[in-house]
Image (tube, rainbow, N blue to C red; front, side, top):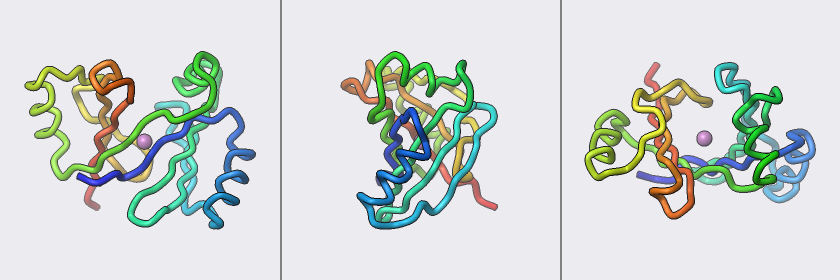
Length: 133
Ligand code: CO
């Protein structure tokens, strides 16, 4: 497992993109809207990992709700795995609360699933697996 990306929830995606453009001194490598999640994502490549900026595209987006409740900030840490189903099964067996038992299609051509922050010292953990083309 390596850290595939860290997800940062932001209020204003354009402003945040400018900020991270300055911090990383690089342009974003990818932008993508995930309609099913009502979220727009901007990726910056940082070595073998990425920074994923997340902005809600509507008031009832999970990200908009998150930002309204908690403010902007670190939203999740994503670990890349080779077999997400096997990992979810293993972690469920260890007593972790899996938020979506069936991996779903996320941004960046990945299958994703989340583990509840209450089981992870307050950090929402995402597991992701690249979808082979
Ligand atoms: Co993510």
